[in-house]
Image (cartoon, rainbow, N blue to C red; front, side, top):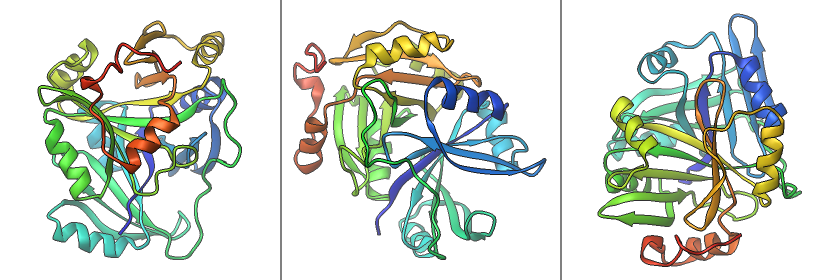
Length: 308
């Protein structure tokens, strides 16, 4: 059973404002749009990776309203594509994963078959398949993004226990570690699925945990507990991309600065979701890590070096 990181979702207070930022200001491409007035309002978008960002506008379903009441308008789930959702449901049940809902057919969505579970922090993830053979569009990865174009890079989970979360996603969903930067059993680690390719299917899941959190992360973990933290875009020429973003009227929350050998800056979307803009981790490093031993970069000079 292969679990492919297909998309992650956010619940939005105002779809028009969200689309204006992600499409017009951040240059993402709309890949799918599902709309039925006062019943359904969903958009999928992305660039540079086969993974997509799903934006869910009003009206929100009951479980989405529960999420909003607890976490506000924010990232609310991961979604994995499998060959057979019913078989995956049985496998995950045998692995002891807590069920959110059982498999059902989504006739309005190409007849997709979907179920959902919770990880050990209570964070939601979906599992779905295309039994009818029709599939949603995904970003074009045949043509690499331009140097200033933003590619969807990763989504992040903030948790109290890094290794517990890592074990869950590796043992239950067969994800593989790529890189880690850990000290005293805290820090961050990047995971990906078995279909990873550094050029076309390079989307990652980042897990972050104390100690040694950034001040922003400490506040968020104290306020919300374990949660989906932020999403990230990367650009080869991150300085030019950052300049373009600011010229588009996006408000920064930090300046662009160098950390861990990469350039990074932070923004917020209209719902207050944290967005990281960074220079990409070099494909050669990711590819070598995927094929071999996962390096702990805290034990190298990575933090003091520069890839850009």
